Image (cartoon, rainbow, N blue to C red):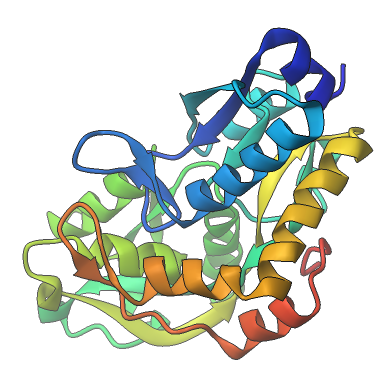
Length: 273
């Protein structure tokens, strides 16, 4: 059954969200889902309500993590996943993606006092990755290709990976730069943690939906493209990446990259691969 038909017949539309992917999708001080991707999905929900003529459509929120997000979208438990999920060709065998919503890069987070400045400084050390992410795949390839001799620890989510570095159990955590910036900004003393300048190309983010549902995908893509063309996307970006955000009022101070500006001018659902 198509997503729009399912929503009309059931009276409910289910949004999948992440609990610790700041500033895209996370829990605020009141333990409610919030973030940039959640705001984008709120616009999609409005479009769904208008399309099926159901202003009273109930919106349910379902938590997902790196391991559960694709199965829950694929089996229909979640109608759209609003997080920080990369669009990859391999993943398209299970799910579909909207036009891209963000362009990240892979970078390392380390403790400032450890005097680590590049990937080569991590040789032979223990590093953290989040299980089920494209970053975990990249870290394994990097380890092999550069003969780094890393011990790679897998954590269940970004918060746990971050904690491994904070507590000294791992020397570094590799993840998309914006996820690292969000986690770092919400610590008591951000100066104790450093995001290294060295960066590697990552995969574009997009909203994740079920495969073989062209009607719903068209609605999602149209909604996002309209936001980009109208200037509303830039306003949402400024709200989440360049302004104080909950729960602590931290400002990520993360200006829009030139690659993202290009993407807004020419929306695309193509992965990097």
